[in-house]
Length: 205
Image (cartoon, rainbow, N blue to C red; front, side, top):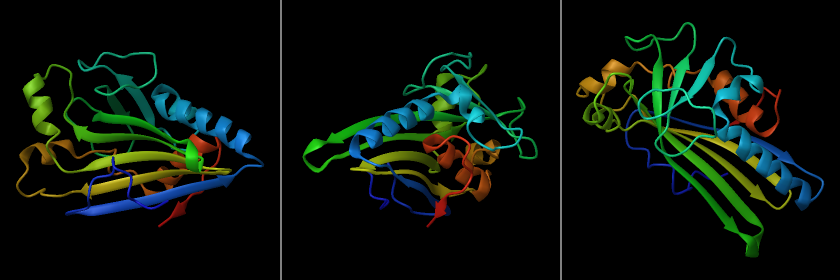
């Protein structure tokens, strides 16, 4: 999958990642069903650990005030991350904000895509809206894209501008995000599990 989805920001500084996992189904109808299931798993943040192999990892979906919610992810929600061995903020967790979720359908060419972009942020618990907005101004992003082209399905992860402007961004230095610190193997497990639960291998580009 080329990294030209409109939700994937341009790489400008720091590190970047591009990882993929691909399957080919028997027919387009099966692929359409798999696409819907993958989309549901991506939005089901509270259950990510059930179909990935991120040992000890915990992802919890929270609202804009840091309160736990039991539903599919929406734009504006936060994800709290607790992965042993990674650095975290003062509250003991790391956080990302979901800043965009988009579905696109191109029936004339039998293609559909679903994408979700996130950005590291400070904890929304006991923090003002202005502070949270400031923390989102750092350039690092994480974008998941699910794409179906006929019988072929791909899940991809795009990390962009990771660690960019770390010397000048005080907010970024307070994040030390476990999210951005996930290993390639952990990212591979997550994108594979979104498409095929229990799988742990992915294609890295």
